[in-house]
Length: 325
Ligand code: 8YV
Image (tube, rainbow, N blue to C red; front, side, top):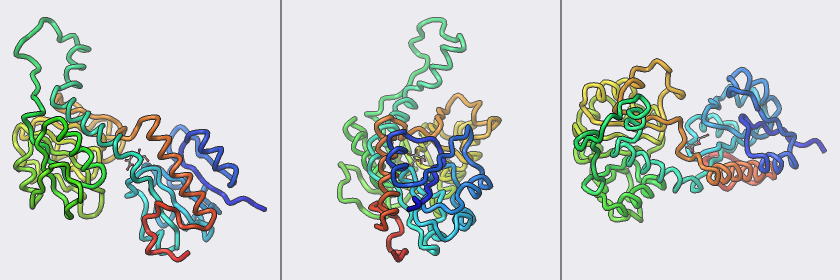
């Protein structure tokens, strides 16, 4: 019997690829750069499943290039804003993701950025490398204690609320803005509006999904509401923050600091002026990047595909209601 074709858009963990190759005709796109839409359209022809990553814009055109055979799009990650889910549902294609396994790792990383912003780690590293460390200066490079700070969390789902728990354990006051009230809040206080959260917080950390409503959620107006000594953390999705407005706010010290794991676009343009600022820490979308977590994500993505190949709706399908299998 001919095995179904499965396309994986980046190099992945060998053990998971071996597992997948036992039940499929596996195509791994192991090129130095992610496939362009044109390349993906060519590779995906006749595929039953796609193992997708954040870089892949999985549009209706990609789905149509695959043809009638395409049944499963399995995203390596909890966020799946790079997949046109409506187009997939219209074509009876299941879209699956990897919720849960990266919660602790991503939330801990957001807390790492909070700590490194408060203690100016990236700036201090540049200070030493650039030969600026001459003497011990009691009043130089001072940060601030988190225990006297209020953390405002936008989006109090799995990752946001886990960050709330870590922050409370570190004696921070935690407030959050979320449409619904979660069952477990770890002592965090709900505020009624985004503006209230921005006004009250010393640190604002973003944990909502990227949707049409959250595009540019933090732009000029919102940055002007934040405290002058505030820090903005983004480990969610780049387009939620307007990067040019953030540059303006940081360069004019309307807010004090930002730490970004994600940008719009990704990667950030090499000549973006924000990269010249001292009051910014920026890293390349690594919040879930630990060996343990990435292995779990890879396994879950493969599990989702294998379930789909066996004609079961994947356990972590996000459009179960919209497809008819
Ligand atoms: C992934 C992420 O590494 O899960 C997410 O939503 O942003 C990251 O954990 C990324 O999606 C890679 O595909």
